[in-house]
Image 1 (cartoon, rainbow, N blue to C red):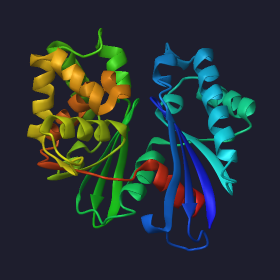
Image 2 (cartoon, helix red, strand yellow):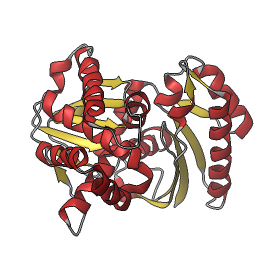
Image 3 (tube, one colour):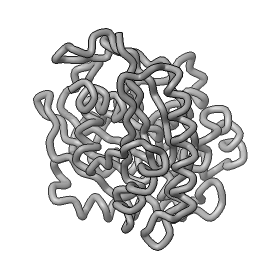
Image 4 (cartoon, rainbow, N blue to C red):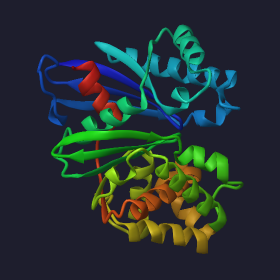
Length: 307
């Protein structure tokens, strides 16, 4: 058995996961071949450090401090490999190359900057490592971007990324902690514009969405609290997400108290994420969303580290 460390440097969180693999010489790797030993996240909120399109020095300092802490923890697990990948917050910055170079230099950790297409593909690899996915669209709502991937015949096509996520939507459109009705509509409006700008928008129309990422998990946690279910739901509908948003509009104080129980660290991004999700349901004519257990990090482990 060997241990592998993956650090996901995202727009909202910086997360370290150390995986124990059964046999890293196997040519094919599914979820039964690895398990996580530690899953440690820091809510770094790096999207807030983008100023006039550039990633600020304060953001670089924040990323460096968190990465050093993660690297220190990873050393206790004697990892065969420890790798860091970065997504939208650095990919879309005007000073992307300089920021990545400084972070890598100060931490001693090489940073793999994933392209939008790579991120979407790795999300597909991770989402399908424990389950076959039927035809549909894979949705990954992150802090700074939303990835869409068309799934057909067990393969991924038309990987696309839109520069709008739950945290960036909060930063651009919300004045307080919870968005009001008008602010929710502005978030939805921006997403509709971004969907219209996609080269093949109709390719993503489907009955079934497959969801990965923190915003999808937060919505499922909130739904668990709302319904009083004993376990987090594995399937969500447009009606369920719409009811969450209506509750926020009609009784924001009661909503906030429940949101703190469901996902305290995502109180400010929960509703923007649900607005994005509800808009995708409507615009893509989807009937249901299947919540996937694994995502980009597991895809990176399987595709990039284990080959």
